[in-house]
Length: 316
Ligand code: ADP
Ligand code: MG
Image (spheres, helix red, strand yellow):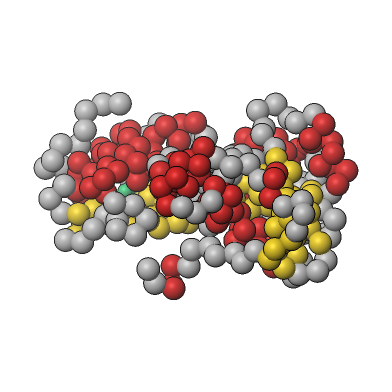
């Protein structure tokens, strides 16, 4: 990467610098520099669009994590949403409210944090909006993607008897992983091409909460989770030693793992688990049932699970 924009670049100097960091991309005949970007449609005609806004003091503490991590998180969280639909990312739009005084330095760091993910997942930075103010850093990323045949995987579509799978260990992301999402883009596409995925979501609010969204959207179904089968992340064990909540509780309720939770038929699950596609981790964690409600089965008894995902409107 070339040298930075310099502290006195100003808005237009900064945008010009960002523009020079972006390579030509056939999917974006006209990128940064005009009133709108022009994108070339390459697939069926449907587009996936997702957006996420991150606020200093709410989703991250800039003074603790630095702007690179914020950039990575902003792009990673959006990529995770594209993964959850089994889509392929295309173009990103980045809007920022930069704290005055350090504006260009923060912008440069944001971009350098975004860069590895933009490159790794072939995302074209196609535009954005730049503001500075006396308030804290705000970053909003909008990501466009293409569905992959046979089409986007929705939250709705699960049926009683379906097997619930997750793509990796859960819990304790607060110890740092939440700032460095590893979006399961390739895993999702691989799975989508291997078997029919009935329903899918990325785990941003915690397994219990996000699985509940699938169940709700699939017509008010329920599920039994197998306590012994939930993959518990090492971070959940470490956090448990600190705060006294059990590692399993962390795995079930912590957010921002950015793994995928999916429902597939028992036949598809058997096929996947017998011969997992290359580089895809899969854990069978439970079963969908007709009776509504979420249950945790520890082998001897069942207890109801109350999903407590994070509600931004519910206050601190
Ligand atoms: P307008 O006033 O017409 O909205 P702007 O001056 O805001 O135009 O933006 C000029 C160009 O720079 C546009 O192509 C816009 O998408 C792009 N742009 C502005 N800010 C950013 C940013 N932070 N990252 C990427 N592109 C940006
Ligand atoms: Mg603008």
